[in-house]
Image (cartoon, rainbow, N blue to C red; front, side, top):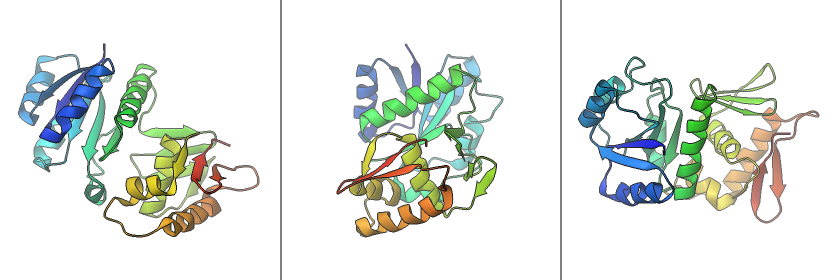
Length: 222
């Protein structure tokens, strides 16, 4: 059973902890200080699920995630709200992050993916989809050896699609997960960004984004 340490769990995250338990994960909740004590004692941690919702002390967060404190097998995922994305510290060594509100199934899938990637010795900071590579540390994307210049929203849209490849993503889903629930634009905003994204990552040899008529889009490693 995989050990998950849920750090800085707010009351609203208690239901998530219960759902993760039901999915077969062993979840312990603690504060930043208690998490540091766990790591110092060498406790087994497969996943460090760190909530940034209440904006914990950034110095304490960086100290917790120091490379010399974490086991190579421990994956680190952050939990945050859409409005916190722009302020996310790029220096944090994260394997992935979860943007609330997120379906429990999505959180579990991200956790399992991170655990498996660590077990396989993969670089969990990179997403590979055919010839497309997304560098989550550097906020960069490549098709083959070609660097793709993306705006922040284009990058986040591409990343979300790639993490959900072969699934149909509705325009409403993309608006809520990439732009956030406070964004009042319509589906046209998604369509415009998809068109720009396609012009940058697709060519005769590569087709990644498929249109699902009257619904949304599907990402496929073409």
